[in-house]
Image (cartoon, rainbow, N blue to C red):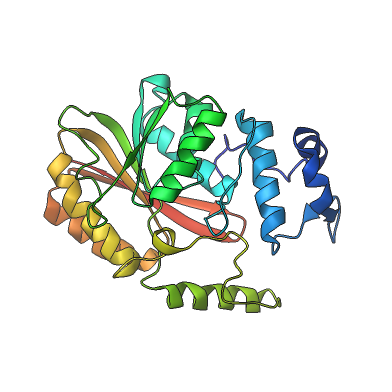
Length: 283
């Protein structure tokens, strides 16, 4: 993980429980040493996330409607810290557009707390957007994070970037799968690998609908993002996205070259056994 990531070491459950006493219900002895939680239990994961956001990121409360994605915070923080290096840590002068902010609003919450960045978050799901707005209101962050409804699910930047907008950066955690069945099958493989029982609707980090899948999956979404990004080249300094499948990088590189991108960076990230990368480009 990035050296600035607060989660490089094991979770300090003593201080996390002090921040959110309800977490104590889910803390169990670790098989080797110390404490942990059962990461196959969605309620435990949700409670851990709330404790982390209260303890480390200055929130007073955080929760999610049933069925929405509960993000792994260390990985989300890694994206923010790595991309901050690309921006040369401009601090509070940075304005960021988060594509698909979700009900959890996690990137704006981390980015504002760590760097003072201002955010605009876009979302096609009205229920998710309403919940994210409620979280901002409860945590008194409305003045720093603006949320916008994307009424055309086929568009990414269109309708979200107005003629007067200027952004230093766009970020995105794209839908990785092409269908609900593909998402469920991948979840089943993970559970089988862990030797745990699995049901189609049981995912420890949750998520559904546009959070997990779209027509054509991750490859199609990234292609559309590249094609749209060139239309806003004068209004955005850096575009970026997570890319889960390393095999997509060659095609993405070709698409960016065809679109006329002047610069492209691949930022490798690793959290435990999980490997991913961020691709950033500019015109």
